[in-house]
Image 1 (spheres, rainbow, N blue to C red):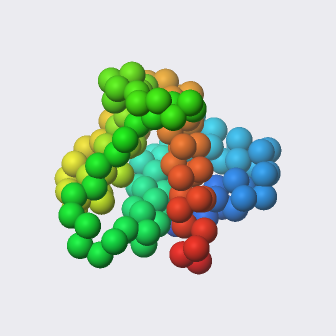
Image 2 (tube, rainbow, N blue to C red):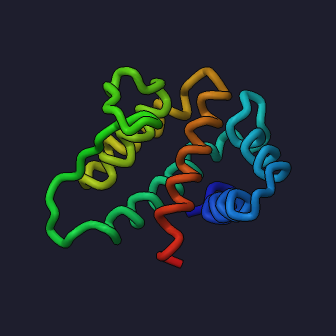
Length: 145
């Protein structure tokens, strides 16, 4: 997937490499350019996030039993205690729902929820979501390479 001259997959790969190498400076620069309110690549935020969601989904599908049916999520805190989905920040909740929609073959819902994240007026919320997506993709795509 590409938007204009900038390959979306290349940006997603760069962000993942920054996470894996612990290159906080480059990670900060790229994320600010994508998720910042005036970032020069803000128009690519949603497609890059969609690429990361795709990596997460492929990693989860790789781990799932064949024919496992519908995917659901249990939301827990750091102490492994159940958390209501309503207690999850809205942008992060939309990311989780985008992943579940993609896993459950509902591309329209996936796009809708990613649009909610991209439209969040708080750039820090968008960066938080991007970091979650990156961490999930890092862990889940490690054995897909």
